[in-house]
Image (tube, one colour):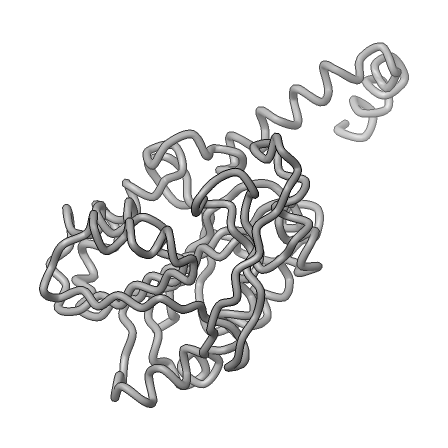
Length: 265
């Protein structure tokens, strides 16, 4: 019955004249699955996740890799009574704004990035601005971004470490919640935490998956395999959609989405 319906549908509607209609259906379908909802913290699903899901887990040790100016930290402060928060922001201008805007004796600030190795790399940012959320380790991300009207790029040398090494050096045994927002560099950050992940010492992870991954050449499957001991969800405005099984057609969507991984019991 279903095959017969689609045969008739395709016979009459699989035509160029209906292309705009079908593209609109695809976009709205993606939005209904938690994709491309980037307009505010409610639509991204982050506020619901923090206030209704994460808060019930009572995380005490939190890491924010790619803290930017601290808006996410402000939401965490609103809903969660944590013991310590480690904020990492490599861009020097953005880092100063972060320190000026976020207050708390239980927050430590680090003007550095995280990766899968320790060393120095070049951070790229939009040329006519001083520290933007679009700063990335991938030049192409910045050079071709719609906000970069000048088409110029700033280059800043930054220091990198790994989460495994940072935790080892600072005696951190457990990370209750790790948030990563690094404009395409998320997988490298998680690979740098592989010892912590494999030993079950990171409970919850949130990261973005979007068009930046076409530049970094990272697939959703890479995350899914790395996080095999986690249940993986996509955030929605007031809920979470569990990704029960990897399917390329529904998982390899290179458009804005927030992914949460919760360690299996």
